[in-house]
Length: 309
Image 1 (cartoon, one colour):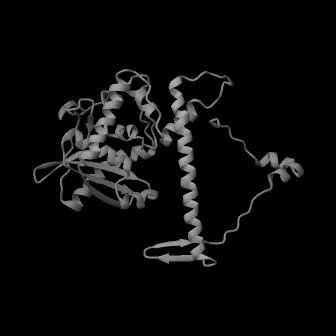
Image 2 (tube, one colour):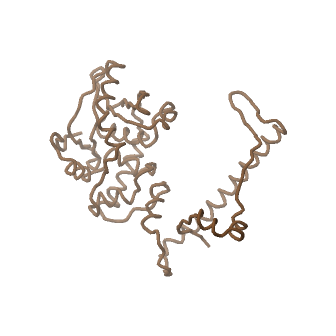
Image 3 (tube, helix red, strand yellow):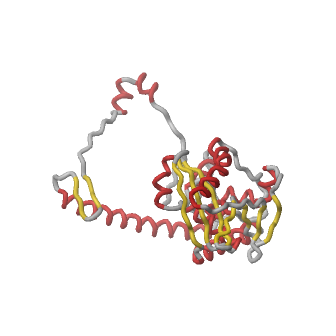
């Protein structure tokens, strides 16, 4: 890697601009389609200069930055490893479109290791206890691809009072796939200005639903290259139906074992089949007999429904 630019004294907006010069660690999960907060279209617009790079500072991100030194200090207290700051944006010499702005580095047995600090809500405690969330795995493997490091320490302060860390080793296969995805995105979409293909992430779904919230009521002729999508849709629908039926068969077999028992245990697994009582409102009757109450307490929502024929 080489030092692209020093970030000492750099203003936030300038720092965001430098990040458009290549693909950074936080971009990796977007390109991989596993980032729940940003769509591939938003990233493409930023990298092609169509929109200003934006990272709104919320209370969550504000305190995340504020607590980063605390996380580093606690990590050092627990491990004895010193975290060194590197105030710079680095660039891969082998793949210049890949850049990295590191939280810190560690020299363990004279070998370079990456350090990454995270904060998370208490709801994420179990997730972090089980391992590193997938979007952050892509981020740190990206950093190891840029720097050549063999290991990353990623520490998280969860819920403000639960500290943990994981050691993640370099995954050559994951890095190979990541480089290919990033190269494809940068070469075929950013440099050419070509709109990328939509992925299946929730962020992309939310983006499309928001940008094209209202229909204009018009009909258009789709390009011929859209026809295979209909075939894929049909094939996937059949697969989903088969999976649904197979899952329902498994559920019914479990019910057959339980019979009128509420809980069954085998090995370290368990299944419960409890009686549940639900209460619902007869909306049609309420609207007919007490329209005043119905109109006062009902709300309506607007969305576009996609139907494939």
